[in-house]
Length: 458
Image 1: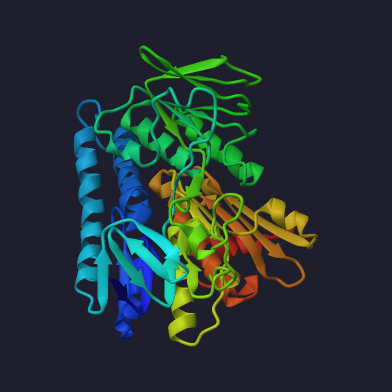
Image 2: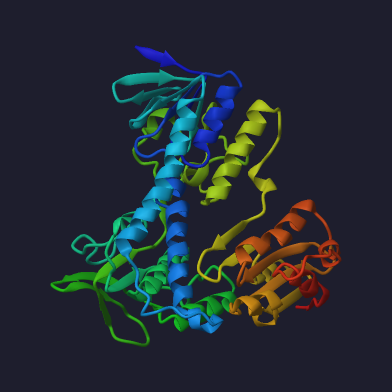
């Protein structure tokens, strides 16, 4: 027996549930299929649980700094990892439960908890049941990549997901990968009390960022006692009786680093290998991402791919924007496209890095005449008052069009301040509009007009 729907949504990350409810509220019969946890990566193993840990780590860090602010904290600061994990699980669990109830209470929406596989372009098997619909949306997300390297099959390791299950403190956490995931966990566990070593195969951590940003981020981590081994060209893993070993081929330092726990943070791969996409005729690229056009349509009419599995963003906010694009185009007669959005993201170390638009390297490569504005956070009153003066601001402007091209705000509040610049870019306004804005004192944002008033040719 085959059950017919108007739409089938496979996966429940940041696009799937919202699209399912929006279509159901429009009167369409919708099936949403999830094989594990409602909410996907963000709710269960990504943004919400990790930023909960970031908050706990920040509390521990500030408690240790209490004397800097004239506050006496009796005795040494310690971290109760079981309580930290319980708090994290409670917050993540409440978010997941809220989504589950929302979906369950939505008329016209049926939730299936099982694995989905295509039988044909419009036929999906869910357990023993067959579902069909003229519109099918894939929101199946991604998972940690486990690269092929010597010793990986024999060596115990953690991923961004399994690391969240720890309720005891690693003595020495080794992290292979110097990107966002690796750096965030490095600082979290260092502040909890672990020794931490980052191993990165590139010449510097976060190599996709400008060199000055990368250098300052490493300096911030260095000040907290986080070790970084870069240019690790030949990485090999091994199990020792007393822990984990990572052999590296670096120009400096010992050829092997030993620790108690190992985190592999070397990128993500899409969850697209077990969906039966070949039976539907859906095309994937060489990395497994589902190929979509700028309107998120696959090569098969009636099938769309949203979120991390399409390789067009890889963030919670890009996944949610995918939902907005699909819903607007299908339900509101819109013509929204992924090309409408400006690249933007945050790195949630402390202080955070807010980023939007081009890097300086990309702007130089574009051949434009450029203007650059910078300011050290040590020259920002709000940062001084808060005792958090690490980092800097950097804004790039097209000298001819006066359009802002990109920015990096590395410093206290940078994850929020970046939106001043991002919104100006979306408005298509000249940088002078933001330069002449009257911002509130005392804030970090009030220095953005100052930075723009001090632009110089690059």
